[in-house]
Image 1 (cartoon, rainbow, N blue to C red):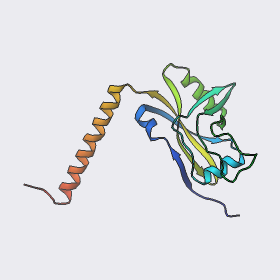
Image 2 (cartoon, rainbow, N blue to C red; image 1 turned 180 degrees about the vertical axis):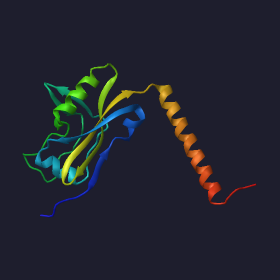
Image 3 (tube, rainbow, N blue to C red; image 1 turned 30 degrees about the vertical axis):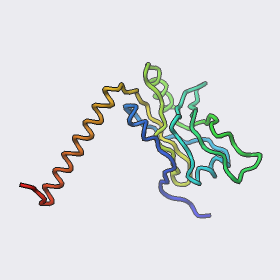
Image 4 (cartoon, rainbow, N blue to C red; image 1 turned 135 degrees about the horizontal axis):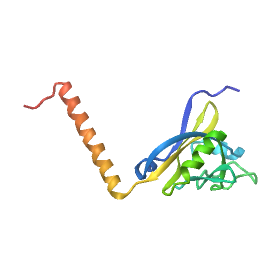
Length: 160
């Protein structure tokens, strides 16, 4: 069997970066059943409603949708079951201390295979208010306009 190398992205949560301000990002392993791995290898997953919580000293992922494997039988998994995340004890303590604050949550950002193993990026995030979202969008638009103008001037397409 050929060993997989590199990173293969399965799913990402783009809306999380819009709705939350990301403070720290942790890479975690994820405990999966066989049919879940096969479904992920087919590139099917959704992180939209996902979040992570610490329960009984362990990190658990809730609300992530991995659809049932089509060729699976009675051994198939339930799509939205909670899944255990694998993280170092030191990192788990850091996450526990940071999430005790109000308004701080753990949000999954990306689900991917790294060297053949399923990994998930979990971020410590604070929710943004509506005015924060608008100001972020305005800043992004301004930097886009500046970069567009600079590249236009460098290419010599000035319109004087």
